[in-house]
Image (cartoon, rainbow, N blue to C red; front, side, top):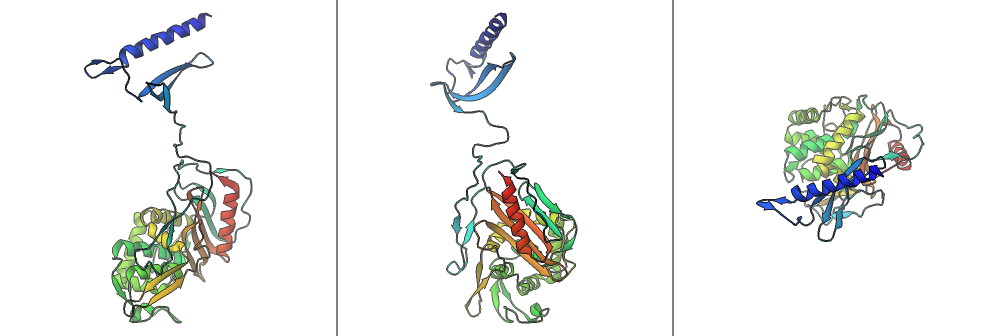
Length: 364
């Protein structure tokens, strides 16, 4: 009984202090609290302790305007994993013939760290790959890896950095001619012909969609081949890709090497600073205009995931030394999930197996 009296006395004192000093306004004492202001509410815990909460209250009606925030969560947080509707965005060039880009809507505001929690005990099992990485691209949280810091030939994954250098240093509308030296490394026929002219951006789309070595060489030579390679390695250094080196713009050279962890860093920087690269690689088809004749050429992607609604972009790669490489971004729970597979005889099968394992064992 005595304890309860002490509690009510203490509460009365606190209310009096709040009335006398908490309602001060410039120039004197106000008898009215501004509408919708913060109010300190005191309550007694089970042990007799005093708890303090900051609530926003409309003082005219005593209506709670906003509840206390849950630490680490925002008002737009959600546990739902529904597939969001896509916004169709037309390309700025050749809109009538190019497949439209499906732009993923803004990711829901959820915690960067610990965005996914494990709900299953399943294992991905044997993965046909020398190196593997599965992670949340934005937070960097790692869910599965296999020798992710080991260096490995990149093959045509190199073209992701080639695209960065083009977008950073060349005009999209720059006219570029195909020359004999650009095709000198080929043993067979080329989709591009000597004397043809394209915009730099059209060549970029061809390079990314069908992994055209010719398009990569044309772009690098038009800029200055050695200068272009220097720009690729300089960008790798700026982004902290410590196990990454480029010797050519195509990935044919076995000296073009990286690690799964570095490729994660590369993908994150592209996703944040050059999103158009992944937007191009999402599409199952691109088109380019040969400027001399005005002819429109169509190219179908060599990526099995291209055109699928949950695919956010990526890049294929293959050489005899590297075997099959694949970097893929998928939308799951409103977040970009990265799957990197290096040195695989079935890169698409290994990637799909890892992605399905992740979906079956992790939730927002």
